[in-house]
Image (cartoon, rainbow, N blue to C red; front, side, top):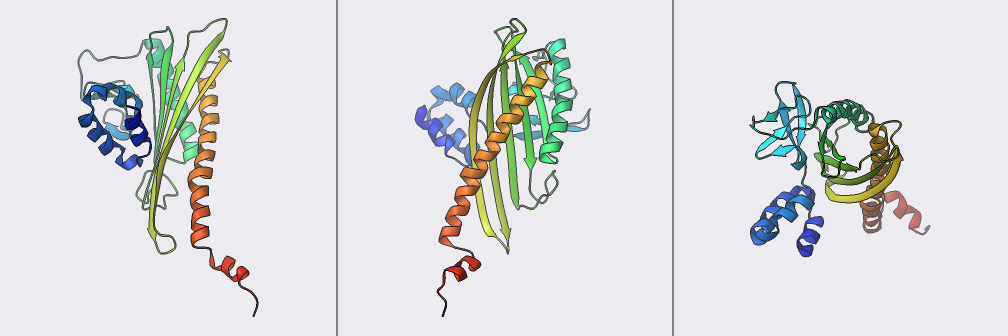
Length: 256
């Protein structure tokens, strides 16, 4: 099991679904553990009733249907499906509206969805999802890549309130893939994923959404910096070492 998870962590996000399917056929006895611990690139479905797209994941799935956060209906329709309580549904609707503003400010487009459900510890769990297509034909602005995808998954476990305090456990995963193909950069591809966790005990005076929003903003900023330093920084260092820019070569040449 550990070897399988290690292999999947090292696979490019675009190939993770194929790798997961192969591993499920090899070790079917660990299928439930693999499906619960492995994050796959996010998929999108259109909610005809609301006219909006929403993101598909394991957290809004029941059988082969997926619940839309906009209409609160399953597509395709499903009998005896699971729904959040009326109070939690109200919080879910508010979270989707606020998170859409966050998405536009930080990502300049894309698709976002928020899902909430009760857990067994008298608290609840919230899942915040963002999918940004950065390709030329994508749904975001400033698309200049041949292929480009950013998938962000934030899952927050919120404990029961005790003395006006609550325990929050945030697990965030970022999956990035991009490819270019033009005269200036040539053919180039880069992909990878990163996961981090944050735990905090916060006062609930301002509401759960304020606390969850601050945690997501802080951890996502750290993840973006890590991706910039690890993926882009190391790649830039290697490329400049192997193929230094022309102006750098000229400075290194002795005067004749």
